[in-house]
Image (cartoon, rainbow, N blue to C red):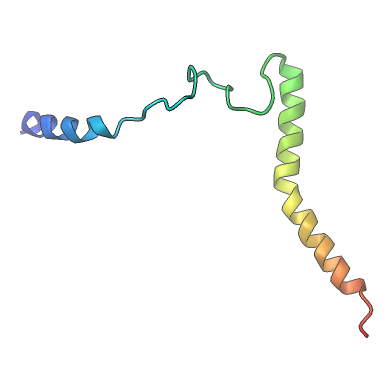
Length: 74
């Protein structure tokens, strides 16, 4: 029974396979904004990117709340 279903499934999924579309190689780390050459540099930049990416929304909300609290009403 499964062998009878295999051929139609492969026929449909063959068109759905992911194509390259200009991305070279497929090596891990090619699309990162920093290099993976030295482990210490990678750790430093990964930590900075994580802190900025995760912490920025909280800092923006804090800034907006403090700005609204300190404004003088006319």
